[in-house]
Amino acid sequence: MQTITIEVKNPEDAEIIISLAKRLDCKVLSDNKIDKKKKMKKEELQKIFKSIAERGTLAKAIPDPVAWQKEIRKDRPLPGRK
Image (cartoon, rainbow, N blue to C red):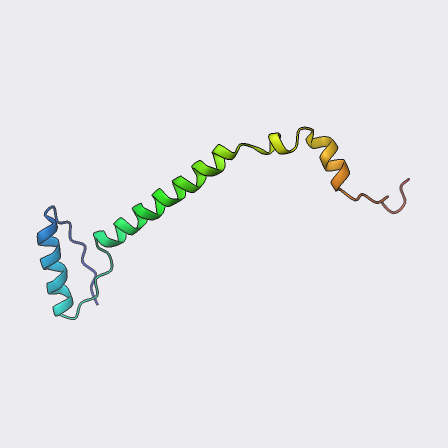
């Protein structure tokens, strides 16, 4: 088995090469459709992160983190210590 990488500038030519490869029973490992899916996923993630950022930080929900942590934690005395 051999792996060949082909860079094509013209999208129509790329479609011809991909269809020829499939007709010759070759496996196409990557094409622009995959790149478009990655781009769409990236854009979706950017929207999600933007909405999270717009909500604000935990500083709004927890004004005093030290007091909050002391309240939440359930410390117990360590063995051999008072």
